[in-house]
Length: 299
View 1 (spheres, rainbow, N blue to C red):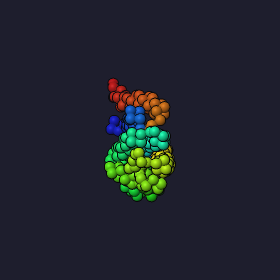
View 2 (view 1 turned 180 degrees about the vertical axis):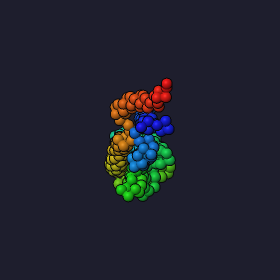
View 3 (view 1 turned 135 degrees about the horizontal axis):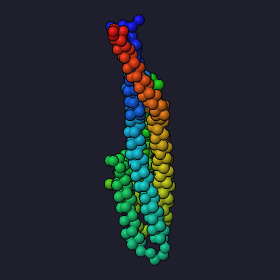
């Protein structure tokens, strides 16, 4: 039955056109944004997961920055220890030279005095962002942010790599005064610290041998300290690489949830454009059928 009041064919064609236009609009949004899930309405579960993980990834970015700062602190401390070893080795060579007959020990002491002052300068200046890991208070704990953790229950926390310095883990406990620590502690053999002893005409070979014994002990302790800093630096580097890889993995995982498959979307776009043209043509045919009724009333 054909009615001039109700055109069912036109209404059906119009509904088809509306659906095609909506799908075409969604596909065009996917193509332009590159996202299959760009808002909660697209897929509430995936959108929620992706939003949370993107937030966590920003936190990991801050952790990466903190690790970089921690690495700089450790590198500064290691450089100070390495430079101090070079200076103490030079003091050692001066003491050996002072054992030779006819050497003016006061002249040797002038050189040693400058080297001793250099040791204090190295330790006191080995500071990064206000922290000095080689001239500090014994027993104080230094820490470096190492990771951001989300538990299975949804709780979040920040973990740190900690380093507590004993007196033998410091060049000085007071760099300004030159006391305490490896270089400022009184030597067991000579009765003097590395930075407080002096030699002169009355200094015997036995005295110098005792000083050399304490210098060797200091060099051994500084080498051990350098190894500790090297181990911490290595751990920070490994953690930094892990955080970087973890961040990339999260980005990849989020992409699998929300990114659009551009090959698929391209194919859909072409198909929907064709469907749109056919739906428009169908609607046009359905609307023209009403006009055909007029021919029934022509004489």
